[in-house]
Structure formats: structure tokens, C-alpha cells
Length: 209
Image (cartoon, rainbow, N blue to C red; front, side, top):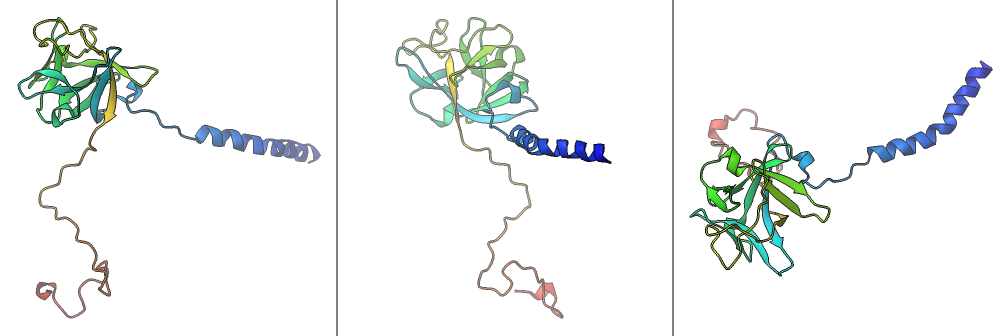
């Protein structure tokens, strides 16, 4: 009995230390959702891809209705993009307004397509230490670059900036289910504002006003 009591007292002395260690291990720290570790299971994000470089070029990647890809100085409906995970570290980029996928030709030129081509429209997302991302063609390894301002992107290989900062876009709104009516606000002036009592006894709901 004396040995068991001594062992119990010895373990009891370590209890506060173990509690502190377990509390520290259970603390959760936020991980940026641009991390490739979280890009699986059909994860969808809405982002503006902002970029800049040493030549003071500041722009947001924009997919227009005619399929051209340009850099816009300000955020616009055409620059709001949907980034969807295809598998860990690999995403597709879709223009929310134009419903065109961001794709890349063999020479690196960008274009917007109404049809998804896995070889041309899949990009590997690489997270940099400064918070910017680099996007590379999964099939060819070419970096995603905005076309220069002084030349149409279809005329030559783009040499613009390749670092992009994913800025949060509009929150995704779940689609409304057909036939489901929105809840009416409670009647604070009523004796039963939450309608928990139901119809009164002896009165049919069919005749309720």
C-alpha cells in the first residue's frame, strides 16, 4: 500500500505539467485557405488574383466574355474568380461572370474557354513565404503570367508578373431550394411571438386568419 501511495503522489506531481502540455497541443491555429494542403475534396473559393511587380504593374486577372485575359487596374465582375480544387495542390480557375475557364496555350498565352480541358486548364498552386502564390500549368510547368499592357496576349508569349495574391471575393451563397418559403420575422407584439403554442383548442387551422 505504501508503494502504491508513493507512486500515486509522484504521478500527481506531474499532473499540472501534463495539463499545460495537453492544453497547448489542443490550441488550433488558422491555416490560410490558399495552402495546397487544404485543396482537396472539391474545395471552392472565390478570389480576386491581384498581382504586382518591380515595374509598378498592379492589376487583377480578368477573364472577359470574348475569352481574352487581361490585367484590370480595379476589381470588377470579370475579375471575380472561382478556384476549385481538383486534387491536392491542383486547381481550376473559373470566371464567375463569364463562366469561362482560365487556360494556357503551349506558348504560355492565356485564354478563357467555355469548356474545361484538363491539360490546358489545370494549374498547380504554390504558396510563397510572403503570402503570394505562383500558378503553374500542371501539364507543362509554365508559370501563369499576365500579358503585358503594350501587346495583345495572343501575339506573343506573356512576360508580365507571375506572382498573385488571392484576395477574398464575395461569400458563396447557397442556392435557394425551390418551394421553400423564407421564415417570417417573429411578431414581438403577440403573446406567442415564436408560434410555439399552435392553433387554439376547438378552432380549425383552415379558418385561421
